[in-house]
Length: 146
Ligand code: CMP
Image (cartoon, rainbow, N blue to C red; front, side, top):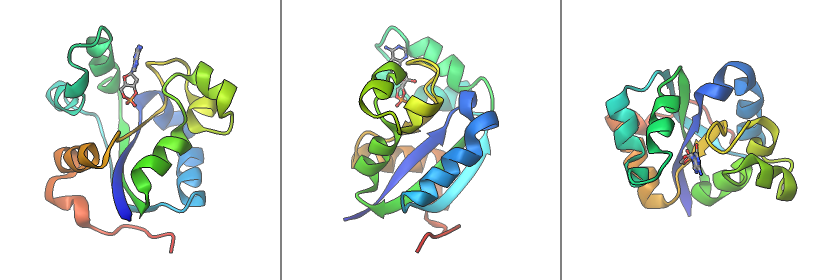
């Protein structure tokens, strides 16, 4: 089924790798329904990552994601949620380099925290994250690969 997913180019990758990541997004057949480049507030970041609240790395994660501009994108295609996670590769770039060297995290992430990109983990999470970051602006069509 055609789906939307929430992708984010994180502060460690926005400056240097935005163009290459956007190129990969288009090459893999996603259309970009909406996007915005913002510095997330701490409150927004905490809400965004609330499923990780009990993890040891939670406060580091929130700090990192607020540390500079990040680019948030609503991506759309068949099977978008799972396909975007494939394009990103595993959370840990060491593992990504081993098993999926062409993935974005293998190419651009520096470690498991500073891992260049985010993608929603399920269709339900995608709906929640898109609503949280874009609200009613999530349905605008910006570009299309079709
Ligand atoms: P992301 O896909 O955005 O979802 C949660 C984020 O937490 C993840 O990418 C990483 O940035 C971070 N993360 C996950 N596991 C760890 C870990 N073991 N140590 C530090 N950061 C982590």
